[in-house]
Image 1 (tube, protein in one colour):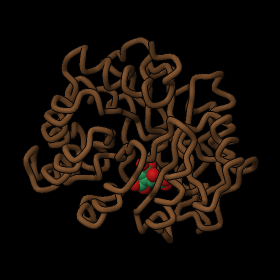
Image 2 (image 1 turned 45 degrees about the horizontal axis):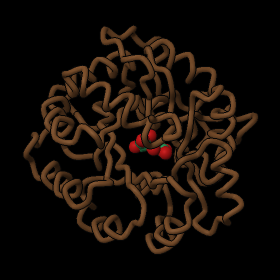
Image 3 (image 1 turned 180 degrees about the vertical axis):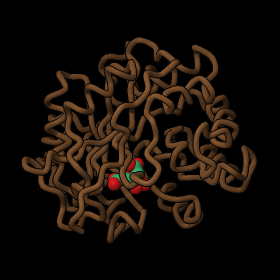
Image 4 (image 1 turned 30 degrees about the vertical axis):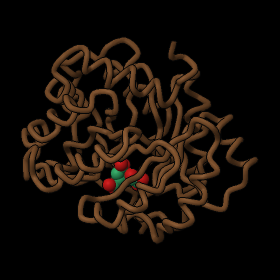
Length: 292
Ligand code: 0GY
């Protein structure tokens, strides 16, 4: 791996939709900058630098107030780039870390002090070498108070994920709804399995994210809108939204972030739903001390 890739739009459109004051982009990443924060030796892709200044400029351009920065697999378990971005955000960013499951209490406390509020378990074989469920469960039992786990997996392994998710002792956030095939429709097998998961406990949240990854038909991602809007309507207090900027591994179909924002009113058509998805819900998970 030697060629560095750019997977984000260089001049995204200004969205037609204006997010409410205090809106949170609850799924985004930073890459590097490599000179300060080298990528992991195990990274499966080698991106160009997409550092905090770029992220914060996009946040402002799109009309958001805050970010939740999820540690990307290209940085492995070294959270320095994400922590650095949080530190530079002037309180407008918090994060989700990726840790070695053997991490000690002091290191977890340091991550908390640096703005992390959860850890991510990634089960995508193209992104990580190993996803040891027993060790993940063990560290999930030792998380700082108020933390949650974020899980990234694809719909084809939903069955084997269920016992693991059932056993998690803290709230769970599912990235990109477990990547359903949205072409199957709102009642297709993938959405039915995902709804069964949501129904199994009331502390499972989900990100209504990534039409660009889930809808093979491409923009304007109509199949995504049709499949996801009913889910948002049925679970308004458990849904989050994010750009996924800088869109790891999407260099062949780079989405326009302005158009992604314009998906929001299509999946959350009322102001009440929009406020829940963009403000109230992410605030409860990431800035609970500010929730009255
Ligand atoms: C995403 C999706 C992907 C990558 C990562 O950590 C990562 O590298 O999450 C992907 O390639 O599907 O949510 O950013």
